[in-house]
Length: 207
Image (cartoon, rainbow, N blue to C red; front, top):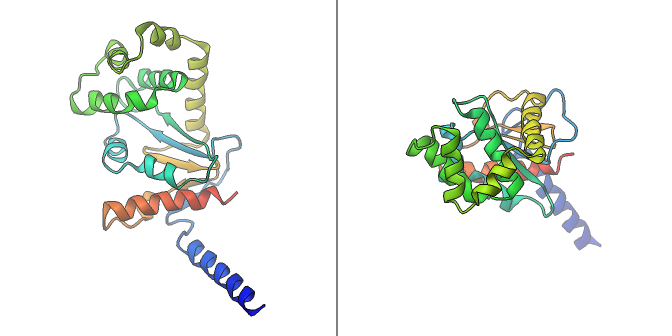
């Protein structure tokens, strides 16, 4: 009986210590008005955003978050249209990527085409990135004007408006919490990424 009690006490202490690591107003912010119906974990980004590029290509934040999430947790990534001259077109292109399930194929080349090589300067350039990534031109064209893509564009726009998005990169959990990277340990990239992923995992469990 004593062993069982000690084991339970240990579990309670471990939980308390874990919860104490995460503080509202520090690693995350509780939204004043929770939004019902949003994906469990929702990330906003822009191909024009330098910090988003760093999150994706240098820190690999999204990948590390995915590894930490409980099985069955849905993680969604939306593009915002308020940055750059092709913001709206890139949001529609991201909707095409979501519809065709080719996000992994086009994310890096679109980031690099917009920010690094600056070869993405038009809607035709965006299409070329998809084709160069192995997506058939006719499939891209069919998706571009499809109802599914129009619906996905509307979803992205509505989510950004409902959550009163102010900037990117940004990550929300359960439509109730926003991750706050400014409150995290930045003494090293590894520590920052670990804390970011751990914070999202913690928030997923807070209904």
